[in-house]
Image (tube, rainbow, N blue to C red; front, top):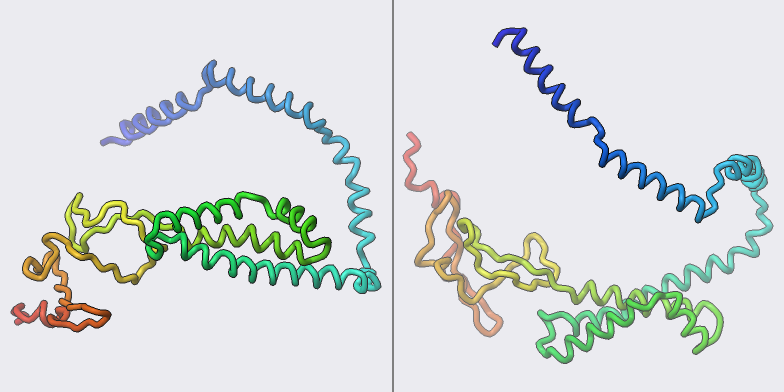
Length: 251
């Protein structure tokens, strides 16, 4: 292709891009409606940019008055700061005490009874659906003022959140290691927080068994393990790379 032809092709592409960027009437009308809506919302919030500009000296004076720090206020502030730390610490402890057992009861891979499991999940949903501020009002009315109702409020609310984290199962697609397209062993299997390296045991896997095992895609064959009564023993060892290459003629 000549230089002139290449330049013509580039010019044609740029012209098409420029044509796409041109605003048409529907786009202009939509932009005008959005701008009008923003103006209307600005009146609703009493938007005053001029007032913000006039307040800059006041804000600067406010920050300037912070230096140097008045350390005599530390005697007044250390006790509330310590109470905040106490509330946070015991709020976490109470959340663990509440969330861990309820989360275990709500987990489908631990609790087999649907009544117990769904009841535990309902309690967790109730605890986390009510804000800690509302819980704080309840506990202030129950036990009085002080840091204790704050710790209870945090513990109850976050206990519900923590319990749901323990109880939630993830729907997973269990596939064979050497599967083809659409070859799924278990579809939508609920697994509790699966992680890389977890061992998944299946009672049956169709053709994925020792008699049908092969070195498909150059993979090594897995071992065979018998398990019963909590004990296990290997009856066929895992294939090694040396086994896989043993029949290769390298010279």
